Structures are given as structure tokens and as C-alpha cells.
Image 1 (tube, rainbow, N blue to C red):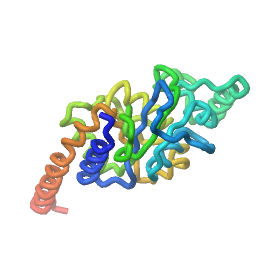
Image 2: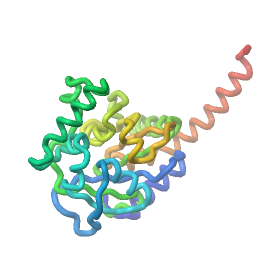
Image 3: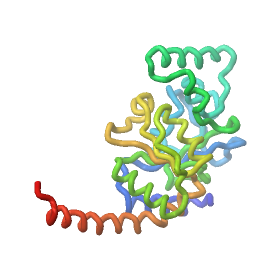
Length: 239
């Protein structure tokens, strides 16, 4: 599915069922330069910074050198830094080790892409001219609950635990396993303006239509159950 109208309908269906603070972002890891997408020009401090730009409405693609400023993000995206910058990965990790932020043995367990992409395309889901590999949703926990329940109903959950730092590892994890939730990390929150009361849900592009198809059913059921539980609380709570 690469018809923009289809992605627009899917975004509208999910947005009608689940309150989202910003637009969901389509991400695609490509083996070639896309002909119908504008190349990003400029610099950003991290790969996840491009999520913010896409959520704001921009459609573009990056190439590996656009990701050199974040050694951790380059690692999760299987992008090799040039020889003159290879030391930055180790320097970043050593700083995190010294801060007791990450343990050395954790590094090998960080999910990453199987191969380096030639280009990475980003767009708001509804405006995407390409089929996304992963769609990322930034949302409040209550909305994440609904998306997870819709994914459960659609049969596309991963069964994986909620991920943490680094946030960018949730993209390859979702590609490999299915729907993934992530609490984010401090770097991502700074670079994307993710709210303190928000987290992420990552849905593989191949499954997002199925989640959209179940979202309204789940939301409707939750509204009815909310009334049911409120009445039970009024009737049964003594304090």
C-alpha cells in the first residue's frame, strides 16, 4: 500500500478513535534513493530529531551522513560512522557508563537494523508517499493503552516488554517483533519535545491498517466500560 489516500484514511481513523498530541510519523528504511521525496538539507543532532520534523508536516528523506551526529542512533540504524568519527561511539558510551546510565553489558542487547539503509524516509502518516516500515505514535498512556488493545484485537502485538533507552532502538525492535511501546529516553525527549506525560507506540507499517480497523471498536468498548466501572465504584467503594 503506497497510495497516499489510504494512509490519510488510516491516520484519520486512528485519530478519530485515539487522542494524539501530534501526527503519527511514517518511517521507511530504503535500499535506494526515493524519486518522489525531497532530500533533507541541514543538520540535526540526532536521528529522532527527524521524527519531530515529520510530525510537524514535513516529508523528506535522509542519507547515512545525516545521522552521524548521534553515535547511538547510528548504531541502532546500522550506520557506520566515517573513520574520523568512529571514536565518537566509544566516547558517547564511556560517558554513559561513567554516569551509570548504561551498563557495558547492555550494549550488545540493543536492537538494531539488520543492514544499513541507503536512505531513510519520513512523513506524517497521512501524507506519506511511501509505504512505511514503522509508524510511530507519540501519545499519553491512556492512548497507548487503546492502541495496544487495538493491536491485541488485531493480533499484531509483539509480547515484548516496554522498551526504554535508547528510544531509537524501538524502530528495529518493532520491525522484527511487532507492536512495541517505548518510554523514550532523555535525549529523545529533548530532541523531539516529547512531553513528560507522553510515550511512544511503534507499529509495523504492514500492521497499521489492521490496528486502525480495530481502534474505534476498542475505544467504544472502553467508553462503555468506563461508565460501568464508575457505577461500580459509586455503588461499592466505602471511601
